[in-house]
Structures are given as C-alpha cells and as structure tokens.
Image (tube, rainbow, N blue to C red; front, side):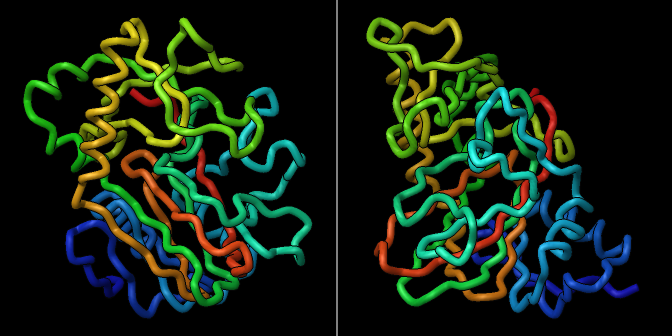
Length: 286
C-alpha cells in the first residue's frame, strides 16, 4: 500500500498531509504512518476535510481512548456536564448550545496538565473561520529541552512541578504565576508531575512546563523556584521551533499534547471562529 503524501514544515515542527480523506476508513498502514508522523513532527495537518462528529471521534480514537473528565476535578466544559467527546471552541457561536474560550488570549499550555492523567493528544477541526480570526501556535517542547544548556538541564532533571487547576478560580482570572505560599495557595487537589518528562513512545526528554497557569516546584523555595521558572519561560518564548497555523475551513490539526504547548492570541470579539475539539486520554507522566 502506498504511503500518505506529506510536506514537512520549514522548521521541522508539523507536517501537512495531502489528499487524505478522513471521512473514509483509514487503513492500518495509514493509521500507523500518521502516528509515526505525530511522534516525529509533533502535529499533523489535514486540509480540506468534510467531517461529522462521528468522523472526528472515529479518527481521534484510533490514537488512544477518549479523554473522560472526572467530575471531581473540573476541566473545560465539565461545569455544563458535557457528555459528548466533541467540544465547541468558538466565538460568536450562538448556534451551538455551549461554546468555550471566546476571543481572549489563550496562553501557552498543554491540555489538562493539572490532572493526574493529562490528555495525550488533541485535535481541532475548523468549522467556520471568518476573516481576521486568530491563528494557533504550537511549540516543540522536546526541542525546548534539548536546547537548554547543560547546567540548566542538570538543575531541573529531577524536579517536580505542580500545575494548579485553573477551573477552581473564576474563568479568565488565572494567568501564569509562580505561587508564593506566603501570600496565597490556589484551591483544589494537585498532582505533581516531572518538570522533565519522558515521551512514552519516542523516549525523548521533554520540558513539561506551561506558561498559562499558577505553578510551583515541589520542595523548592519561592526565591529559588520563581527565577528558575522565569528563565525557562523566557527560553520558551525565544524558541524558534514553533508552528503557526492560519486556519481555513475544513482544516484538521492533530497534535501531541505530551510534547507541545499551544497558544492563541486574542482577536476581535466580533469575529466568528468555530472549531471542534476532541481530546485523547493519556497516562501519568514519568
């Protein structure tokens, strides 16, 4: 059987697969090739798709089980009791019962890092993208780790990071901040994970750090942890290994949530931007 045709992005982050029809049944050969591309390039782009919610789920769950939120630990859409795996990420999306994230800036993050078992991968499918919408930008966090100097890699190798669940706070009130326990401790249960995690398939080392939420290094004083995390955040912002996707209707992007951060700038609140998201479950980071 022939391989899928694809083009590698300029800096090696992401590939675009050509002439694929994800509404049709994927062969085992093509499914394995997509997984290999995902592991190698972090995200895979499929333009010109025409997909139902069933198509989206059938495609997504070839790469792992559905992400099923635990009601004890809130996530996006859990407050409304959503049971469908397809979540609307939308602005000016009044034709849907529930939609999320609106037009505001969404800071660099990986999905569900505050949970015991964060999601392993996610996809977004562009349903209705109008002019002047915002792109989505992905950062390769395996490259971010390898580009650190030796001293910094040695310093962070065995550290553990708490990411506090932002959904215990009022929506939109949380920004990236190193927690100072002398001032405030965010609410909710916590699940520390390695600051340097290992990819379960490629065995790569990954800088597992977001730039979106309240965070804290386990057992590290504020005066030591805060400047260390600030330096790592600056390193991420300067990272050249990123991909910026300008959405077109029918685009589907599948990404590795274990090895990337993604970011969305704010945009005009009058702009209609509707995507569908499906999330794939994962295990405990190690």
